[in-house]
Amino acid sequence: MVEIIRQPWPWYISGLAITAIMLILVYFGKSFGFSSNLRTICAMAGAGKHITFFNYDWKSQRWNLMFLFGAIIGGFISSHWLQADIPLALSKATILDLQKMDIHFDGRTAPGQLFNWHFLLSPKGLFIFLGGGFLVGFSTRYAGGCTSGHAISGLSNLQVPSLIAVAGFFVGGLVTTHLIFPLLF
Amino acid sequence: MKFIKYIITGILFGIVMSKSEAVSWYRIQEMFRFQSFHMFGIIGTAVLSGVLFTWLIKVFKVKDLQAEHIKFPEKDRSWKRYLYGGIIFGLGWALTGACPGPIFVLLGQGYAIMGVVIFGSLLGTYTYGAIKSKLPH
Image 1 (cartoon, helix red, strand yellow):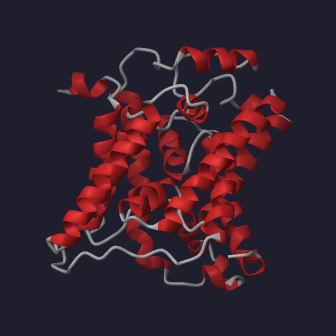
Image 2: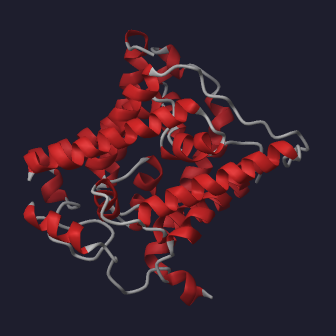
């Protein structure tokens, strides 16, 4: 059993598993939306004293912080005990495209070439990781949700606003990938 | 102890995100280059099965754990915040290669530098809260 789980999962199993997570939370009387945790953490840290957006009953959101805590543990369990020793099956075309930018495919989850402290502390590294994080944090509250809240929960409930948001996700993602990355690398 | 079920669900989520490779920086690059069906298959399957089960829950008036009828929140009717916010999100998603869930899952996988991404995202959320009233919604 563990041997089967250790292999990379096919997309249809992964997709159904994500829906199962959403349904479990719905059954608990909650909704699947990860990024609201960022607002909760700000509120918890006392941001509500100065800014009304963070002045709300954040304690009602503690369940989601527990979900976030679990997600970290889940990542730890996966990398320690559920990882088969085979490289990521990335498409040849992507490997070649990345190579043109001098980013070498190492078969892991993320390129070690970028995901290290030395690169992070360079101007490009700070732009990508600190700047990228800033954009994610800013926009999830602006758009009222992220991939889980809009693409999964929202689209499942046929919400037009979520469709607009997801279209926006792709516009932004295409701009970064095809216009900004070639400028950086 | 009432929180234990959320921790367990979160652990499942972390495992699903890891095993699906949705946390992979490479997979996000591949998706935005339309060079593999993998990520589209994952999101497509999740959305189609999600639509089906959400509809079934409504039709059969399914009750939750607290024996209350399950309701699905409606998003506010507007387009500006979703379009502008969505585009900014996409810019950040492709830059870091991770959306909010995977950022924390990767931290658990041992990518300590995700701590910087988390710090940046908290700064971003704080900034949104501070200038919210000046933005078009």
